[in-house]
Length: 396
Ligand code: PLP
Image (cartoon, protein in one colour):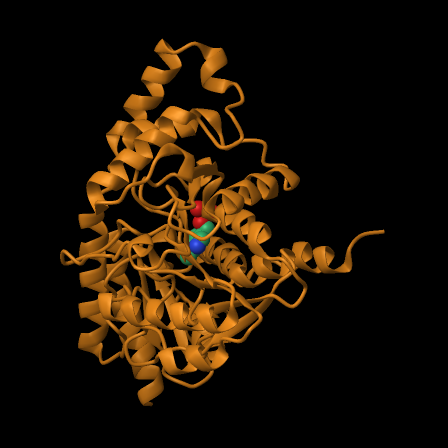
């Protein structure tokens, strides 16, 4: 009657959703303020005021037919030009509107991009642990085979020797995500330079380009004045998958884009394949109203300082207790070393103190847990007592 694979995917609730439901149940018993839910990556801050201003102006002053009608499949030309101008000014690039294809967020950007570039059954897509678990589904649904590079446990940069070993003649693409979910790491210029040198060398050996897919929904969410290298400047065969879900706190509105730069080999063909993939997947066009909103708000973000305060509070608090973790440089996740090898068991123990954490196993990194700190700062402050109790539990 149905595809067994889709049935399995649809009927097994994700571990994160499961935790979210559990948190709601506990809140009814012990009170909302006594549940410390670090499970979801749903931005806790409102969008900047510019979003509301743009929405009101568009709804009041623009013709409803233009605001709510279809745009071209690639997206509104004025919006794409505004994005190109912003990136050119910010990163000294040379993009134009026809490098951009508007999408329903990063998930759509990735699925369309993978569908566009995967040619054969045995094309391999390399992901770098720890990685966003949906990559596996997206790549497999596009007909690819996922190859996982084990994590660099020291700094959560890229384990370059392992990556070099794992690239084969079948490698079609490498997906990277910086700032990273779940580690909070930002890949340094050194990492990016070494990665691009390796990809250029291997592409030459293979006689076909390896596509670098840069998944960047957290690009603007970085701390301490850190730069996030702009990938197309380092490697010509880069496709950028962007989303406004996190930068503008608009995850429910489903808006982002794919960038195919001119520098890319056969860029016109790749862009056309992106349009074709979007078409077969039935996307038609990205939400019209929110295309126009982001076009007007380009360059704005939610209040990143609040996320930084949360990062400092959580990181300093946990380190003072004695926990081990790499200081997050971006995104809004902290990757904590579990106090026992089995991260799922550690998370179960955390529940005893109403601490809700996500095991790192599904991110390809056992022994760690992800804490999402896009939450209320006061909750973080209160949770530290629970983290202390959890620590004491393991010292007993
Ligand atoms: N990629 C990463 C690394 C993410 O963390 C997320 C969402 O959390 C996505 C992609 C999907 O984002 P979107 O809401 O834009 O589809």
